[in-house]
Length: 301
Image 1: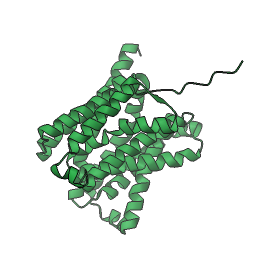
Image 2 (image 1 turned 90 degrees about the horizontal axis):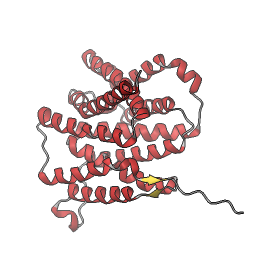
Image 3 (image 1 turned 180 degrees about the horizontal axis):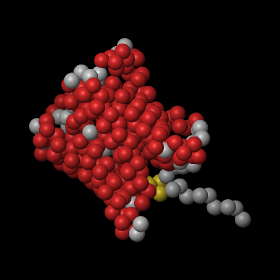
């Protein structure tokens, strides 16, 4: 395949991923409204993803898999990241969820400094400033300076924690660079399924898995296949395209989500929310050049 074709395929893969995640809220919300909770849907769909992924990539995993303790951490962190995001978009306003989640570059900056000892570049400081300003404009309400909480709904806290988990997982993943990417991808699938199962066991609703209607199982199976395919094409795109270009393409998720939320759920944002969201999105555009590696100590003569 020529470089031009490779770039086209990679770009198409990233845009497809953005489209999928920009629309993912709708089937999960619809299933939730039909009595199939997010925990049930997450467990079922990711079990399909795991079964399909292990079948398709069995030889690859047999060659590349080796257990590392950090995989347990990645499984829990990325599992919560995806589960909390899905739960948030099923409960709340789609764009508020996405924009609070897209504060993740801010947390990445702070965690990279603490865990990897990376220094902020000028772009990194700009990311911090734009993220904080955009966040303040986005969440502002009259009672904020009177001591009221900045976020008043559960889904908002879920989205914020999901973005934090995403940032933490990315930093840990970069630190564990020796682990093959396919193995890291599989840890996400197992993580979401695990958290879905724990949530159902905690609420005593695991038995309800047996009551899921056949037509809902069909939707869940399709979701599982789509999620597995999305993991593959996104990883392929990220391995070819520069980080800044990939992030620019991924921001199309906001466009797809805004249009779909307006057309399918009648959700619209205020001018103030659009302004805050634009600043948060602008910060994400610069996130590929936020930090530089810590300088190595010079050897003594």
